[in-house]
Length: 394
Image 1 (cartoon, helix red, strand yellow):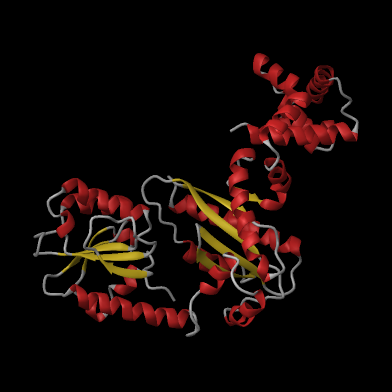
Image 2: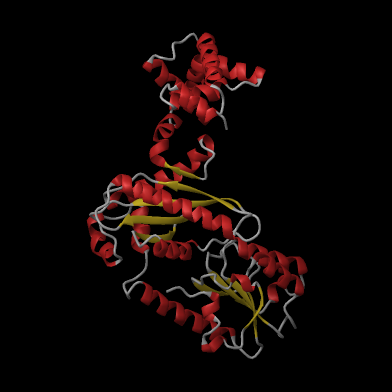
């Protein structure tokens, strides 16, 4: 279905092209091909393969090495250099860098015109796109919905052509790199194909490059909202594991929208998934967050900062000061106690301390705040204050 660098090298027009470096990256997917005639690569798109004579960097060793590194970080599919015009051979520094980043570095013979290669690639990519979409166009329909464009009813026939059922719920999973060292290219689409086989094909998915790597998930059959969310969370966890295994020096954060039932709410779902990542980084150390769990935090985040600060100070400042001056854990204990619905045993178990320690800390909290923790109203206000304090702690 996808044209990888490895598959492309088997095309008749490319049988003389050699892999000089980055052989471990031959599974990279080619989405487009361009001829490079300018040193500025800010225009490079994910999955783009560059063809060049090497003129723009022929006399600059640092530029040669930096080019390979930056192309890899941008998710380029590879770099193919035509030799014996401006470069007699591909510089060793570029080969070393390509191997380091698992970035395909190809050598084009002098006799092969770049225009012929460009034509062969373009022809193959067009054929692949036709096969992938059964000759019915691209995923632009999803981009339109995500941008909130047009009338939703107009899109229904086109969505059905892609296998998307407008009458069934769906959920959006957004992936965003939070750290990158070395190779930053994640072949999410192929990971999803693998999961779709191992997970007994219980879900449908549409992978889209939209302000990050976005996955639209829809369960097969009539699944409940709860089941769909659990399935999406499981897929997120499995993807995180695959990324961690193949790219141990990189990490990625993921955000899940709430379950959506109308196609015109796709833009709303994307915004929720994005907020889940942004808010999750502030209130939850986990790499995967869902908006449903952070919706209250989002509401708090919209209140003027001065008002929130004043409320936090009035409710829990004494124990914040106590913890700071005594290296205590009163605030953590209070948060755990409230999330455990006031159960001392569960609180002690979660904190790995004795129940008497929890009792002592709770008594100290009541004294410092002058409250009764058994009051539901007080419990709600304290939970609200703790959430707000996390959002203030930037």
